[in-house]
Length: 204
Image (tube, rainbow, N blue to C red):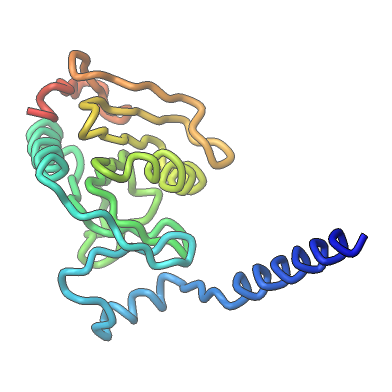
């Protein structure tokens, strides 16, 4: 009985500590995060993004990652021409506490220039994350974040596995449609059915 009582007491103490830690965690808004950046809190070479109120350090950009981003950027710009804007590695506000920095975002063209007003979720036609070492994170945290925000189409480019995971139809924090396309397939953006991209060209 004494051992059980001690175990129960220890469990209660650990639970109380966990609650206190959770209370002590400081969550930031996008406005606060931006002010921190303007004040020079982050180093110029520091790659961070705001996810659910937490400042998260992003994975370093390796050779395979950079190659995929460069290839996709070129293919999308050539294919879309004046029909959309391709925004490489620029932040976009998803909510009041989330401002991720996806590898590529395809934005609709609009009357108000993006120099005068930030892009919003409603401007996003396609969002792409290239995953070299961050595949698990992109499949869970990022996928839930983008689905919850209602991003209509989200691609995860698996740089190591040389395949693209296409996610569509967001609903209640998840995507109802998902497909993995290997390098011998083609991928077509939902908003641009005439644009056919070779998966192999993305990993060339």
